[in-house]
Amino acid sequence: MIRLIKHLRRFRDDERGSIAVETVLIIPALFWAYLAMFATFDAYRQHAVGIKAAYTIGDIISRETTPLNVDYLTGTRKLLAYLTANEETDVAVRITSIKYNGTDKEYRRHWSRKRGWMPALTDEQVNDMAYRLPVLPHNEHIMLVETFVKYDPPFDTGLKAREIHNAVFTRPRYAPRVLWSSDG
Image 1 (tube, rainbow, N blue to C red):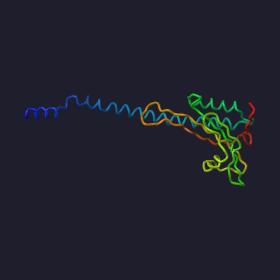
Image 2: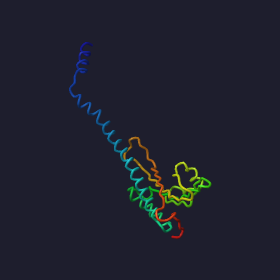
Image 3: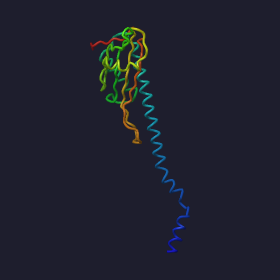
Image 4: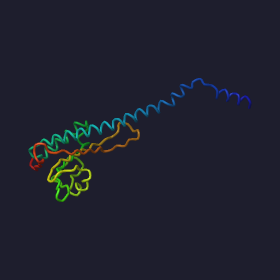
């Protein structure tokens, strides 16, 4: 019995190999922390890329003087997929022309079109989002460009797959409003 206690004390006080044991214990935690930081950074990067793409599409549309059509909208979705480095099935775009009626103090949808899985906006939905819309003078038109990008983290570190939604408001530059043509 005394001999067993003596061996256990010697084993307890022996420090040989402690660095190797600590390394084996800490390396998985460091590796996981590195992957978590990478995944978090990638999510922020994808969000920034998405907002830049939305601004780009909004700027392109704001310069249009001819009515937009189905082909133009399909092209904006392809552009969004290209700018965000995603498949076309993983992105959606919704463009809405909104007019402010200063007399009734309400926003009205002039037209709303989409490409992808998101539905077009209705007048009720536009009025419900009035707190998010900019203050406009009477009879002023703006374009609401919304982009939706499906994001799947590169590693399973706690971040969940999500949909990144960006909304950008743009005033038409060369015309009082941007029109929609169902031709084409």
